[in-house]
Length: 291
Picture 1 (cartoon, rainbow, N blue to C red):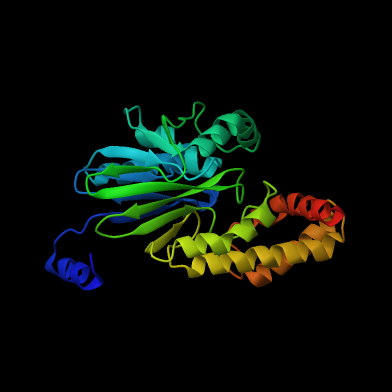
Picture 2 (picture 1 turned 135 degrees about the vertical axis):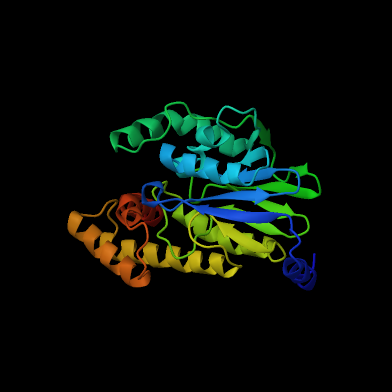
């Protein structure tokens, strides 16, 4: 669908599908986005928030669309993206789809993540809903005239990242946490170098993909990948400067890192990620220095 046709339909009052509804999570859900993609015959969700309360809000938004939930697509295995699937599907027999590697990481790490969140007082469901269908890299699923294709990206923001491209009357890419928009990044899984190296390739592959829908922050264009690259470079540069080859930072160094990254990102959204990621990146840089 061309821009002019879409504009004409919008001005005429005609419904245009697919329509992407963004659900930004609250502070306890670290501002994680979930998306409800409204088609003519139903709704596709991409990710599903984390906490019981936020997934209930997402479920309420789904019900307001008055269409059945056809599937849930998962981008990666961090709790703020799959933890709310149970609340979203609410017992319905809805396929939950992920790449094979993302599914493996979710199942491998879920118990440990559950213990950590419980210790932190974050109320997510006791029984999580795992993917019921897995796809190979580049494999697609279609719902009517809209096709979703999963792209494995390997370790980056998480231990196994993927993104989904959407093709139909309009295009889009649900990039997960491989790109963010003016929100602090989570680098604590220790793959910041690999993440940084793959951004140019991902950007090249998405040149005709349409709108980029990130896991945190507002949707945009390819500039989201440029911003993410600049963020990772700044974070790694500051950790390298402060750690001076050591695999961890002192409390004073962490405070200085937080100050510097707040200068880089004045909005300072999800600032807890800065300190949570510091030692993992320091250790990553120390290992690379020793090789």
